[in-house]
Image (cartoon, rainbow, N blue to C red; front, top):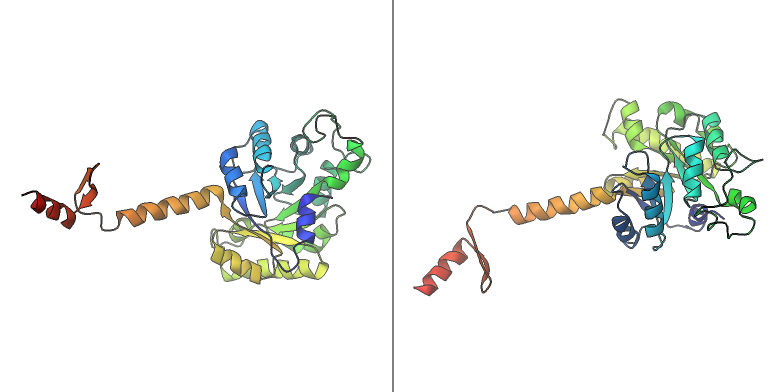
Length: 280
């Protein structure tokens, strides 16, 4: 069974929490995987990933409990085949607008006669040709998550969710906020109303639906709106947030002179005056 689908089925009352991997760094991806996230998106749409970097990321994340989801750059059958051959199991397709596009995405992940994926026996996905009956089992292991980013797409939610092979839905807040004329306002009332409505409609269908937020507070609001799986920020976003907070904390009250010695460490302001007096 597909590992991401298994994660969603086993969630119970717990909402699986993920993040975005945009650093293109295997070591960062592996570290983030050990932080406790349930799943993570390896982003080929907006991050500088080539195929070999994707392989390295999959290898790194494979050393953790974090379930990888690869966002492909587009709904392109050749690219999908390459990503699956590299060892990905679950793909996130951006910008899906209707059921026909969702069906094309699913077909790209399946070998004939169920789909159009090109057959390749020698790759990471088949453990380099050592997996018995790989071509028969691969279709069942493939997972498809379709991302809706516009009011038009969300209006087609029921039709998209009904496409055989669509395992989960995903709403992109950035795209929705832009399409509604509120770019970057991820909690604008109009954005929240559309996203919340999508979550409730998906729940009525029994189809898992997820989203991503920039902060834990925003993600908490999305979760309360009914989303079944959520992601927070990204590896670089979390890194920059921590770095900026550290710099800001250390620069508060940073107006005095600094003197540093191996014996006494760093002294500032009044501490320097006391040290000077002690030496007199």
